[in-house]
Image 1: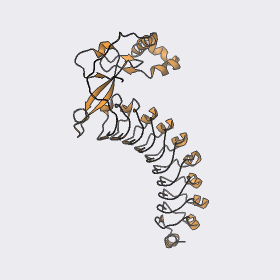
Image 2 (image 1 turned 135 degrees about the vertical axis):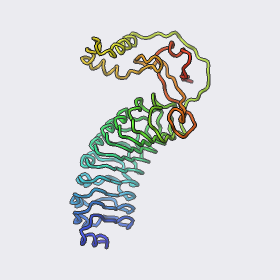
Image 3 (image 1 turned 180 degrees about the vertical axis):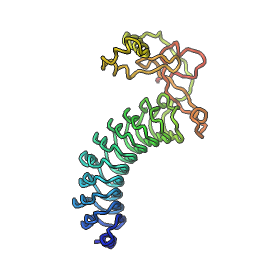
Image 4 (image 1 turned 90 degrees about the vertical axis):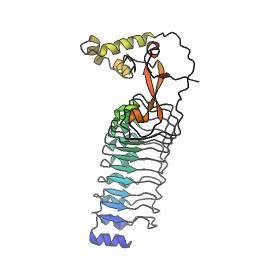
Length: 343
């Protein structure tokens, strides 16, 4: 038993700092400190936690960073008062669903510098989470259930192996900071405009060719995008074939136009055809004529000035994806959209 633990026992302390003590096991007597709200165990060689710690039902902050944990201790799933949990710099490979289910009051979760390959769908149980950091792991994908974390303010996924992000991420409308640098992203999902509070975005060191539609409408204050494969404004000759729309596209455009009129029969009947409604949910609007269309006809790009269009300090320009519905619109004079050539 350490001197710090003895003093804490006698004083009925609310916090205990056992960080950097070279301990390999948590003293079992810590479980008698039932008033503890803060327990710091970081920078040790701890490989497991005693089950007796479940008596710490008032514990709000637990720091287990920089230890020798190979798995998340099961006892954590019983500490329902936990609001801040730090598990960085261990050897954790999995986040157990049963542990996550018991952490519903968690506000901060730090899993940096581990070997986690996947976050389970049960992550949606952390409905009060505001800060999630899984930096420097081996994540290859994210669950769609991440979209249930509607109070999330900051998400750090830097240095993983992500090749795509789920569309549901944009349901986290409280996000102010999103860090996804040094991954394998080739694109960001469309609909990013929904993140109306996003101020910091870091996508440096990926494989992006352009930013999503309406990206320039975000209220960003900081944007980091170095080390991507963005398209360049290099004039090239184009070969324009005659535009031939399939019957599916023609019908879809008609239905989409009619659906805008709330008094139309199409608008009234669409709710009775959920499969059709789901299909049309993937439609887009032409940036020029504003008419709706279903299938991307031509991938275009607009070069946005960060200073002029997004009110940022940088004088650089970025490519933002733009969708047009037809050759007629593309050939209209006076616009600043460019077709993207495939090589």
